Length: 194
Image (cartoon, rainbow, N blue to C red; front, side):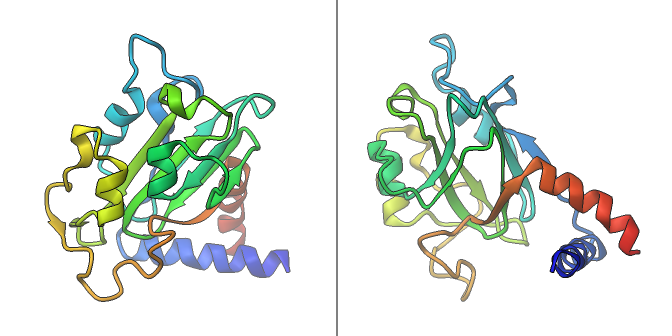
């Protein structure tokens, strides 16, 4: 079974490389660790996300002490309210990687009570393969309404176009998650399969 998974993963990577695409992994915030922003930089995660032009296939890496924190993928409504009760996905291994495989907006928060309210949360926009962004949905705009960043990214298209651009409204920007160890294992396994 592991060989089959490794082969399927390698095939997916080869398809991306054959298409000319190169994926990148970004350490969230370019900080030592995922944590509550310092008072001198309360908007560090928002500024960081706006400074990077993500692409389909990129990954974002959250590094943190697993005994002290976790990272949650949340809905736009949970992001706005800092509601940690029903995350879409929770990773708590201290070395969490989220793969950005579907265009749209994805929301993340610390899983530690109180940290989200102190600014330890992040949203990212992922463009379509042609580089254009989907227009934020009404729930996206409501989630970000208190911040000036609620505007649609430059080059946005309406959320309804093109057909099939975001197959799962509840989980639009992240289709897979794993750990850095899994990414490293794939890079090690790929040459062995070739």
